[in-house]
Length: 450
Image (cartoon, rainbow, N blue to C red):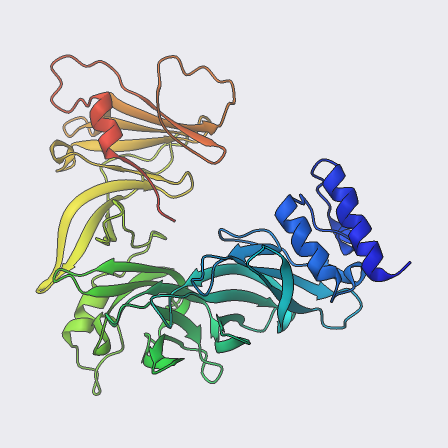
């Protein structure tokens, strides 16, 4: 029996049965959860590719998790199909892709073959990088050799080809229109192979091509980049907030570099190295103001591109074996033209993925937090400065597995994310000026954006 006929019989078998999830060696023959559109693509694929000799590549993160990806790349109102795979008998397991098009009748046919690189497909995204009327395909690739850097590749579709526009190693990235030309740029953090320091560069449209644009070296003190966040500055300009782990000895330190990104290029507002001669400039002064010994990162809490940098201060409290040390109160700073300003404060439960903003009346060491690890609860209690001890309980926040069946009759459900549900217990405290209402707690509670 020919390989083409074998492939078509597989399609017909899958079309007549329910969805089947296949893993391991089973996916050498067929793709899982085959729907009618994928089945039509598979018929066309079988005409040019031996289906029993391929292994489908599943993106590991992002919005596209199937090896069959559909998207209208060229803006003609008809989606193209991109099928990711590798050859089962190929040494090095190069990731490949077959691009297919459909005609006016919806009939699929092979259009182009691309070879990505050895390794696995991590993610797939589509962005307008060269034209406001069409999209480029971005692919993140994890190399077979774990010592090699992650690779980002960008492809564009032309009348008779599917071209590799750019290729760049990356540690972190984000896609925004920094130059204001109506198409997006790719901001990439990568590591120099020569001295192992990190740098930030932009991939931008230059003429008809996507080319390397401005580049800036990050602080040489950075041992690892933990977070890259996009935000807006006080004047509306775009900025990149880079949270890095500093290699400074025994105490782990997180610091935030802030880089303005616009049509003029990249420039530090906070970060970089000392000037020649060891003298401080404003950017370096701002940078050292962000040094902190807590692994909390800059964040856009409200989704309005206003990024705040956390700076920890101590809450009042005493250590106990049951509750442990009280968490830090994070003063949330925004960079203004003349330096950092503190706008609000919060406690951050990074392990459980939430924060609680403090109302203004909770400032000035009037509230502390106790941690109950046995029940995954944080207790917010009034602080008695004379007795140097917690007093009335004002609020309790608990995290539980979704649909765990626990007794939450006295709790209000705040949020659900994934398998976790977040609850609040609010005692009734008549006449207590620090007491909070359920509505107030809902307004102060946030899930962490990372």
